[in-house]
Image (spheres, rainbow, N blue to C red):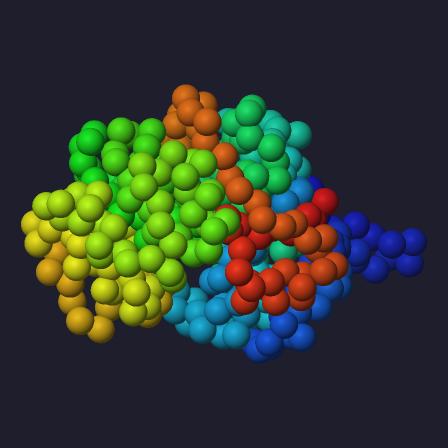
Length: 332
């Protein structure tokens, strides 16, 4: 169990080690390096996960470059382990944890500060933020799912749409966006999806969007008003920029816009509808709701590419390329 110490034949204390990708300072992809570091300590309320797959997101690159340094009120310390979401098997639990057994498949959303993230063989976090992987979900998909799906679900909760109301999902081919399309359709919401590229449009359509267009090529406003002549009821924005800002003119003035914190750039000119900036809820209540939806639907995570842990630099370079869905690392 993590935190245990052993003595070598010579009497020296040996601390259990694990393989991990670490930063010794913030910077470019070349600052990522693989080496062995001590296993994390397991507290009374914690779960230790043997990581099999970890998600790779655009925020990982921002964090790698130091953009989040001090943002959470905790000083950054090195070696620094990235990785916000993962899936694997329970390796150990704290003395107060009774709802998980060693060996169970679980997924989790964590924050790398201050205890380290999931670019490692093992990750530890409070049991509150750990959930069982639904039987029908492959571990690879579960590893790339947590933050994106929970952010999408929190955004839809914030918007509070009723069945048959209309929603623009801007960035519908991305990690959060393609999951938001599915969650919205499960609730009976009519989805107008704005994606990038033929593959993004095709993915949004396959996942159930009522209308899907290419935001880089098509006239978003014209298509939106054709879809909802009186204006759309709401928008969930998962990619910022001029096109996103211009597209929000299609939202009714009485409508609502959900904008996850960290989606940049934010609008320069406030749109007519009210914008609510928010964070995803990763509590047990949220993951229980997400799992119930997954079990009752055809929900799936599109993993565009999975890299072995030793190719983490390639995974981070791929964040700058066009892809749909999510990237992942195979750790174990």
